[in-house]
Length: 487
Image 1 (tube, rainbow, N blue to C red):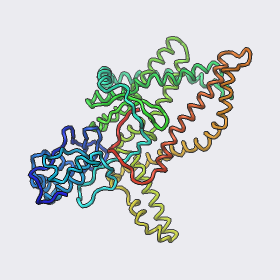
Image 2: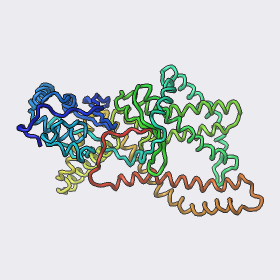
Image 3: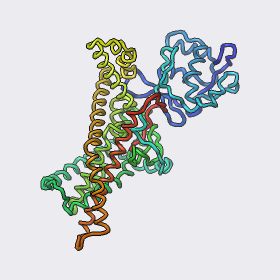
Image 4: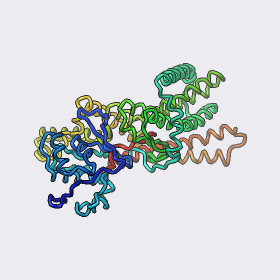
């Protein structure tokens, strides 16, 4: 710890590449953003933001203390400045060590584990108004893991710059009108066909190409979808990372890293969030035109599959486009953490009421429950509108989690029981078909096994992260605010 006797003439300066700026959020208080050279972002309190802006390597701690005292309206000593820097900024690894780092006693902090960015979940005490950096703590298990870059940003950026003009208002309005008209035509033609279908145990052979080509059509539009996110970022002059693939649970997904858009206004971030669906919807225009020109209803069925895939993508439960759209529309970052805080507050409040009604002193007087029921300052900063939005999102989150859990309890056992029979049926159709069995019928016999396999794989991929989150205990390290990958 630095003492006043060992205090040098100047304190460390910010590393090159560290950026400070305002964060457009739904908070009733102005939020500030601290961006590290590696792309991580931290939301910081106003006094800490102002202190960091003074670290130029030239001002002494006395100079900084005077400027800070004038800014926050209360006296701040040089010793307090040193302690705040040492406890809150040095662990982030954002400061360049001074030449006499050993004199400071910071040699371990600048070269040791603190450089990796510890968890700040425990907070810091003793410095009112200098709240610890808000690190988020969002569940990585509900986002993309195991990222593997495929197309580096330097190759993706020229492509994004080429198509970014689709976001120019006159062009975007024209494209959106065409997308809407294409949907009207597609469903007007498709609804009579759907009305004539009757569910049964056997799929008509003519439907087989549709169920084979539908998922393929969705997959073929995914690179264009991801380019839509990158193009939106470039239109608003924000940086983006590579296009890659990763795992969401056990499901393989594509993504574009656009963490740099945290510095954009919320409205522009929302456009980036929905840019993938906007680009992917352009395929509906081509499919509707193809159906109109050829009279082949297959293109109309592909529209149905494409819309279903985009609908899944805007589901806000996992960190797909819908999650980010809700986050930016409400101005509330780290939604999953906010959900946990909301649920803990509601459960703790119910527990205290139950303790009061049943005269259970241990429950009624529990300090832990009282602390949880008091709510989080982070939630209080978003006002009534923000708390209502979080309550609605928390409800939808729980409903979605219960829905997927019911799938696990009810549907999956039936699927697992029938899975070996479907496998035997597929093997028999491929290697030992009855005499005279048509090729289409043989292919149809394999399709149920393939789809059952894909469904099991996808369900495990969606439910396993939820189970991991529910069973996790103890402190949860965090690397800052949500890392923005667009799937």
